[in-house]
Image (tube, rainbow, N blue to C red; front, side):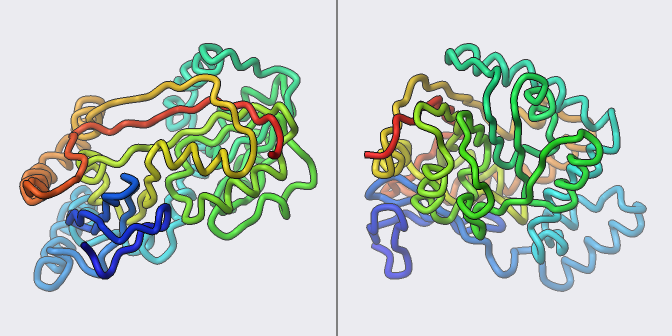
Length: 324
């Protein structure tokens, strides 16, 4: 029982606490949802460790800056999370950096086809769609609007790709106040886990959806492996609603019919280690001891924690049938 925790999804105060390098996680024993909170300081972020990391970074002309970012923190991101999304502006300035995004378009289109979703002649809204590669492709046969958290990225998508791009923060903006029209296809991928108020977000969606609109939305599952994978980042998805409560939240707001469900399951550590260049592999070698230590600390016999080492991303294809 925890006196400092109350699940924002079900109100339960019974939770399992998980400690990682930069975050404390709470796993609700009532509904299975989880949330994280970044620590004010990290194990090696105080002097003299921080000084050593800065010296090493300077002596290597920034090649070892990853040690500083991992163990002390990336100050610009901690002060302003939007910096993470400003990166898309730089991606849009380079064909090489856009290559991986372009390579993923066929995979994304194959998902829609597999679910029986036809994207042609639609009014499409893609939420958090930077750097805009998929939106650009879809705009050939659809009326497309794409949102992003970063104003710099929004301007870059407008200027470089000619997209109808809008700045939107799902935790401070209301879609109803941004759009005076409705859409019949929504793409909400890899964003809902950043949302602090799922009920409020769904309410705003309902007001911009045409009856019979189609929705593609993803929801990550919490697991020990997921927490381990994200423990060195200074800005991460922080709300993981269990799948049952996730669907229940939609059903409370309207008639949402799940037409197809798919999932991605992978061990994030090994996936990134095997599919990255030598520099990223060096980074992950330094992270291994912390994976081991914090994973061992999580192995309490009384814990109800999901201790699986793989990450699981659930993909929902829904149709909106109108308000109840």
